[in-house]
Amino acid sequence: MHVNDHDRYDLLVVGSANADLVVGVERRPAAGETVLGSDLAVHPGGKGGNQAVAAARLGARTALLARVGDDAHGRLLLESQKEAGVETAGILVGGAPTGVALITVDPSGDNSIVVSPGANARLTPQDIRAAGPLFAAARVVSVQLEIPLETVAEVAAAMAADTRLVLNPSPPAPLPDHVLAACDPLVVNEHEARYMLGDDAGSTPEEWARALLGLGPQSVVVTLGAAGALVADGRTGEVVTVPSLRVEAVDTTGAGDAFTAALAWRLGLGEELAQAAAFAVRVGAAAVTRQGAQASFPTAHEVPAP
Ligand code: ADP
Image 1 (cartoon, rainbow, N blue to C red):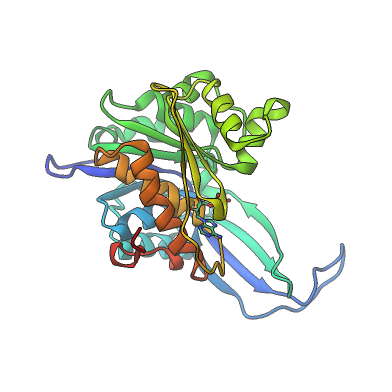
Image 2 (cartoon, rainbow, N blue to C red):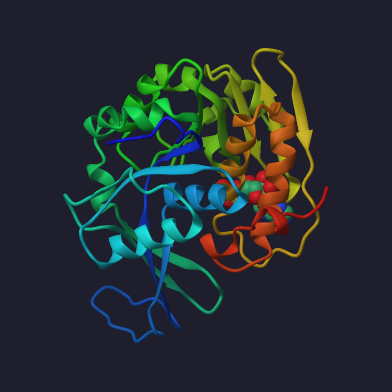
């Protein structure tokens, strides 16, 4: 892989890219049953793909390291990344079909989802080692858990000394200590915080944040939906609440990905954690006011004023 000297990236996202295949149904089929649904809608998704698009749309120089299949879904995902302005030299092709999420939506809006990780499961530690120039060129690296854990561990090991790692443990899974220690910050929603803390969670978000710091990350961000976020810095021991904007939420899909991408970008520009989170809650708030995941992510102009 060739990266020019002038190709410095604000953000390198390492993660999943999926095609979301969505069908509306009157009701879910029981075992052995067939039901007819609406026309198929195909949307680009996956946490890695979402974060990369969110950052690029805000104006960040962004690269995505991911794996897709040599198929129509893979080409759709490459296209959507390019259209958002993401550098796609790090998107590897082949080895398995593109990851898909098979989503049925019933009239109440509830989703049933089957994920086939496909090529995402074939993003290997070797792929990370081969992407050394991308890592060397990035101010911040953002990773989630929709790729193999051993690959995430290699990302933590591949970090250059002056590069910052932002990790969102979604879907939640146990993390090795050396990965936790590299996080600056670990970004969790309420569900992920409870998973990571188990019975020791405590009862308030502030208690969660302090308990999460005890697991070893340099800093912690807890997202709290309409309530905004909480940031905790292990260096100062300071915990700060970052209130959200009051908005009319129509679809919260991808809000966490937009938040994390915005946060990671701003941290790379040198902002303090609380300052970067204050920007990220505005991006998250904008994303929930529109339908869809990537389709809902704002440009810099569309981010509401504080
Ligand atoms: P996830 O999407 O991972 O479950 P959250 O629900 O905590 O995570 O949302 C992430 C961020 O998106 C929040 O910190 C907030 O900034 C924004 N957000 C989510 N829901 C709302 C809402 N109803 N109103 C305003 N902002 C929201």
